Amino acid sequence: MSDSSVFARVRGALVTLGLTALSAACSAPAPATPSPVVSWSPETPVTVSGGQVQGALTEANPEIVTFKGIPYAAPPIGDLRWKPPQPVVAWDGVRDATTNAPICLQAGPAAMGAQAGPQSEDCLVLNVWAPRETATLLPVMVWVHGGGFFNGSISYPTYDGTRFAEQGVVLVSLNYRLNVFGFFAHPALSAESPHGASGNYGLMDVVAGLDWVRDNIASFGGDPERVTLFGESAGGGAVMSAMLMPQAEGLFHRAIAESTWVYGWDRPLKEAIGGWDSAEAQGVAIAEALGGSDDDALETIRAASADEVLAVANAGTGNLLMRTGYLWAPNVDGWTIPDDPVRMYDEGRQHDVPLLTGMNADEGASPARQLNVQTPGDLEAHVRAVYPDVADEALAHYDLGSDESARAESAHLVTDMYFAGPVRLQTDSHTRLSSPVWLYHFTRVPPTDFGALAGSYHGAEVVYVFGTMMPGSPPEGATPNPLAPYGAWTDADRQLSDTMMAYWTQFAATGDPNRDGLLAWPAHEPSTDQHLTLGDTVALGESLHHSGGALFRSFDESRRALR
Image 1 (cartoon, rainbow, N blue to C red):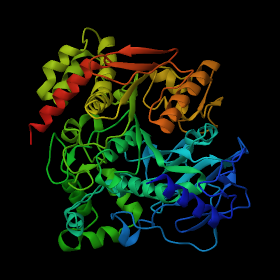
Image 2 (tube, rainbow, N blue to C red):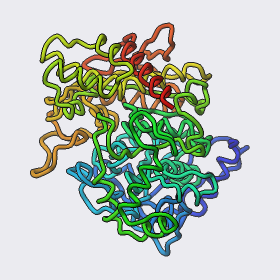
Image 3 (tube, rainbow, N blue to C red):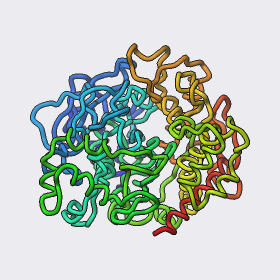
Image 4 (tube, rainbow, N blue to C red):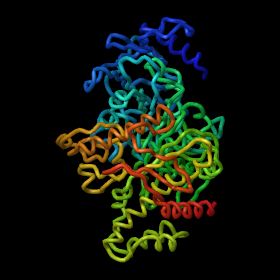
């Protein structure tokens, strides 16, 4: 989009809004004090796709405005269940956008603690934080939450975007369909699709959210030509997937993938591989459990209540680390994910945009507890059962000399095979493109209950990225939550948070995280294999999980040989 078309979009939005607009022609001299592009007040509704919305000034900073629960697509209910997102349904009057909307349907550890609240299939909404007034179009960051593709929401207080807006960023976060509602595939759904594809509805939702940003974000002072897509865990996996989706091309211009989670991301739509059924076979089993088979499958499962669908899906949930049971994640459908993702990355077929990615020091500490490894024999049995074709290589890589070391190495194994390996894969492959990639390692142990239990655990960096630290303990009765913002935070924690926000927002603004006042962060190159350590100190390091990444690649190649 040209500069003139961006200006035209902004001016048109401002006329609609009745806000203060640029009054001079493009050729006129710049005024000494620029007129604001956006100047918002609580009495001023904003026009977006579908109608008008009314936000509110944030409690933490009256110079920041937030809009919550803005629909970006039609409710995916009834006949729209398990279909690509449809255009938003228009509403009459001014829609209140001052409180969180219901979260997407989920169960178990999902709907706990900080995100407890109403749930609904009607959940395709997004939240926006922006400065109340800005004289220039600002960079935009679009957050995709984590949760293993089966839980999570944008209602976590940790995801509050106030601090980002204070740094001159328009922050957007979006809900997307989860678990059986977001990633259910079935032969009848594939037959219904003009693309012969089904199952990646959650990813399609993310693209629909990016479409909304392109069309509407100028009304909030955001620059539609400087959009950064970022996420953590499954949200990082969604970013990795969007990097391959033809439908997402041109909708974002930088990408950040934190602690990328990808298992199942390379699962075929119609074939079984590596111990898991195909996406369609999993869907057939669920549909049959709901009484839907043959010609009436779609009518039956779409008529089932949401609670019935969720109950059947949850009954088949297995153990991710043992590679059993139902899996909720993207599949290779030939349309949204055109081909084997690893092959696409290795061949440089991802979108050529600047990338920032990394991992935490103790990613595997918490999930490894599911393995209940107590002895070297326990760890060897697990490796031979789950990684048979690389078992000898893996067992030579880890220390099985004692019970204590075996327990520690079980966490190391999970870190390598579920986090470090995928991050290294994405980082190393991206160096073959023209756009640079930066790699980080987060090592700070948060002063939280989870930090005391699991060190620099999976998700520990998120509160630092958002700057949403809250002193003290969680509210009485709250379920333990690794993303909870409560802790005995120190000045060192806040300083690290400020540093990380500076890198992240500079990257969003320019496509490069470096600026004056920050330690120079070199782009990743295979010859030097450097990364930035973000911990008690900020420093450069080398060869981050290099051997663990190689082990993951060996395992990944062995799985593909099974096809």
